[in-house]
Amino acid sequence: MAGRLVMTFVMDAIESVDIAADTTFALMLEAQRRGHELLYLQLRDLGVRGGRAMARAAPISLRREPGRHFSLGEPRQLALDEADFVFQRKDPPVNAEYAAATQILSLCRRALVWNDPRSLLSANEKLYALHFADLMPATLVSREIPALLSFLEEQGGQMVVKPLDGKAGEGIFHLRPGDPNLHSILEQSTAFGARWAMAQAYLPEVRRGDKRILLLEGEPLGAVLRVPADGESRANFHAGGRAARAGLDSGDHRIIERIAPRLRQDGLFFVGIDVIGGRLTEINVTSPTGLQEMNALDGARYEERIIERIEALLARRG
Image 1 (tube, rainbow, N blue to C red):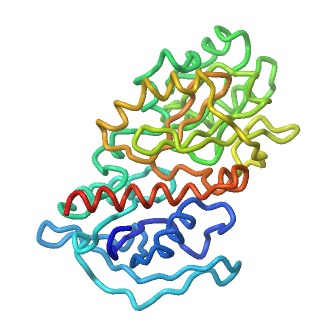
Image 2 (image 1 turned 90 degrees about the vertical axis):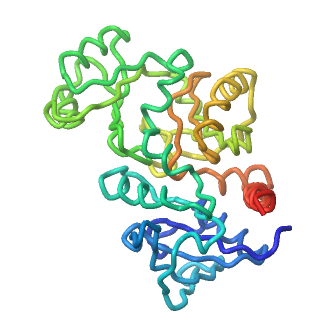
């Protein structure tokens, strides 16, 4: 194991964390178990002085005790390059605040930042997958309702529409002709033509599950199948999806082999890809989840491999 490191986590409010499911919480606990110093902050705590990324960060200690899962020390002002590692784990939406915070983190020179802030700014979780459009279901990105209606017809009458900046299944609709709410949903999804929406061919295999595969530096860490609840088209855990054990098949490996070189090139060290029926639907880069569900199903502690890899990279840098 590496020596004691200072590891900083930029994340959502710690009091809102679901300790039984949150991936960031599991990563922090493992870093703490290995003797590293943990610092906690939110986007609002970031700033810049003299060209250096600064933060008001608090020492934090964690425990698996619902309702009293953290203790914070006295916050202090520091240059983020005083830390060894910065994990940016803020959930979407990727809005102006998120973009500005990411640009601030790009000013770090010494600290290792995951994922690379410059790539986070260019890797929209929906659009980034389109670098590999041949691996995806038929996809259209548009803000024009007539174009979306035409796409629906081209796909045989069923499609999924989702916002470009959403998370956890928010704003996702399974659309079919004859739905009396069809035009209203498209109006809301595009804000009456003011914003882009992504439409994809509906994959009926989603009833068997949407596979989340976590990748560490382009290599598969593990997978979990998210099975939608009865009467629900979304498989996301936040939308009631059930976790089921999942292995990787030849189609999954084909997808991973294609995208891995680009992920490594772009400094996207820890990502989650979504695969339905052998088709890539998204590449999640901001705060991919599913680790604790994988642990429970596989009897594993996948966070150990992630923290070990960070230690090895920092030891190599000296």
